[in-house]
Length: 76
Image 1 (cartoon, rainbow, N blue to C red):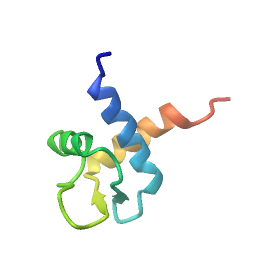
Image 2: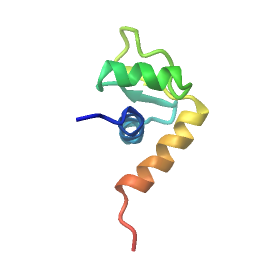
Image 3: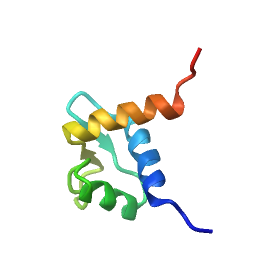
Image 4: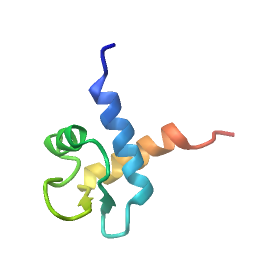
């Protein structure tokens, strides 16, 4: 099975929105490879630290909310 890593990254970015605080930080309990890819794409800060959270860039915050709404909200 071939995995579409971009789709995995989008899903993780959308889920980061669930724990996003008003300071732009979210819990980083996801696959390290995916977190590194999100960092390389400029959507999150460097996930390699002792902190249990990671900050999202302005672009990352906007994209995470958009993806979350697309993937996880009920459309009426």
